[in-house]
Length: 188
Image 1 (cartoon, rainbow, N blue to C red):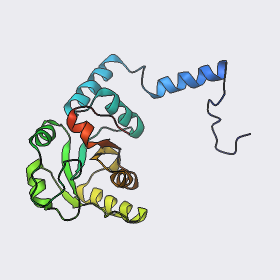
Image 2: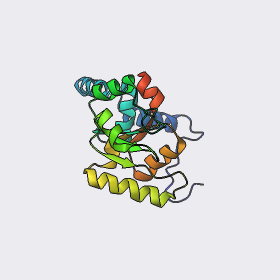
Image 3: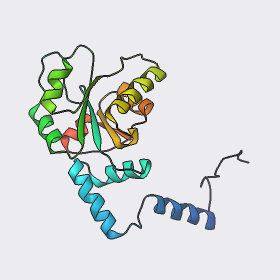
Image 4: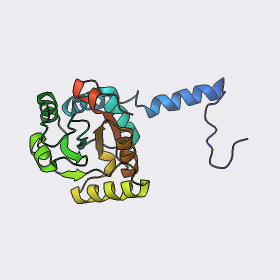
């Protein structure tokens, strides 16, 4: 028997109960949206440079539209001071309808990278080994300073540490930089 608060998910359900769970799942994922809403969301996904499935998944999870992307220096492929951001990455960022922001790894020149990608802000990302609460506080302070709701910002990163930053800061999701810059976006 499940405890208090358990919704007794589908588990081994069969028959009518399984049918109800399938129906609820379909409705949650928006398969019954009016065609104009779907068209509008497809256009928005295209403006952001995301595939529809990724955009719709983030939108269904957060309940809001994406307005900004936080690019990590790792996702940009910049690992040494003075290393430029690649032309492909700069073009992809410029083509996106999301406001770009930069999260910079240690030892890099944040201002030079910010200018290269046209980022509206730059922040030093929490160091590897930082506690969850330190990551949370740093990310939340940055969001407040930018006037951004966390669940409207998608992080484009590469490492598990950056994925943890995304979760600690309450951001909308995480996208691998290699896939984003290759034009194939799968959110996690």
